[in-house]
Image (cartoon, rainbow, N blue to C red; front, top):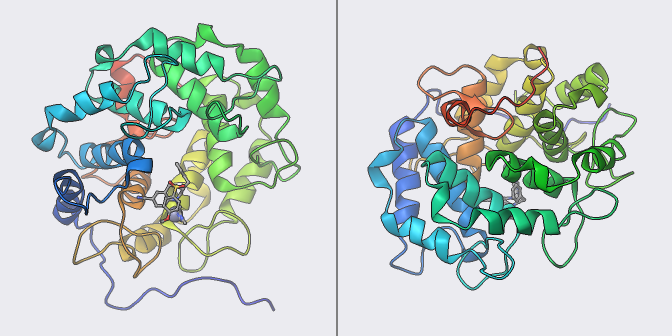
Length: 331
Ligand SMILES: COc1ccc(S(=O)(=O)N2Cc3cc(C#N)ccc3N(Cc3cncn3C)C[C@H]2Cc2ccccc2)cc1
Ligand SMILES: [Zn+2]
């Protein structure tokens, strides 16, 4: 039989959650800025800040280390002409980083420090005639950007600015026979894109269009003997797929279809006992992206000392509640 591509968990791997080490790991990212080692490179910085700050908030370490200049940074990343927000100073605006900036500002209840109308105008300007969205002015179409568009607008309470019905029709056109979704019509199903499309349908209250059990089955097939989840058949497990698959199953009301203890073991094994932080697989270098998605996945598994995370926005549930947002979740 075909050997399954998987990892073997080491006997003396970490078996408990190293909360304080993860806090130290993230906080260091925000304090190494004064030297070349600023751990999150500038083409990713706004998203890196969202990953780091959300991870800190989920483990109850939110306020200690926020520097006021972070808000000045976000303000200075908004392009006055297009209204969009960029990854870092002197970069082009992009939907990915516009969403990250709005997510951070919502967590700190500081949305008013940016030009909200400008952001709304930027997002609306990226919708195409077929309802799809491009990520920026260069025009790449991807279902990821449909999610970024409605996540940004719904957090700002401005869904009126786009054609929602056409946007839903485009996402529907990306549904595959395996129940999954890809980047564009006829693209291969991938767990990260399935999360984006389900998150989009949750925000637009249209999860009815999903082939619920076909898709839930495809998602459960992602779990390997190591307990880890992969993003497509025949791929290695990776912590970030824990989030993409788990949040998708949560939105479908099928979270109980995979083994929680096996997945928890895998995520624990991906912690770096030295530096803190969580990596994609056991033994690899930890980063803020996998640290957030590992902690968020454990939160969905009901881990007690991690704040409840909203499966649609990957933000603390208390923030979504404060905003009065009720994204659809199938029971
Ligand atoms: C390590 O080389 C890379 C490669 C690509 C990228 S990226 O294009 O900016 N990006 C975000 C990302 C951030 C970090 C961190 N810190 C690490 C990885 C990673 N990947 C790559 C990855 C994840 N799992 C395994 N792989 C190889 C996803 C990718 C796409 C993505 C962007 C935004 C939101 C979600 C997903 C960054 C670093
Ligand atoms: Zn990953």
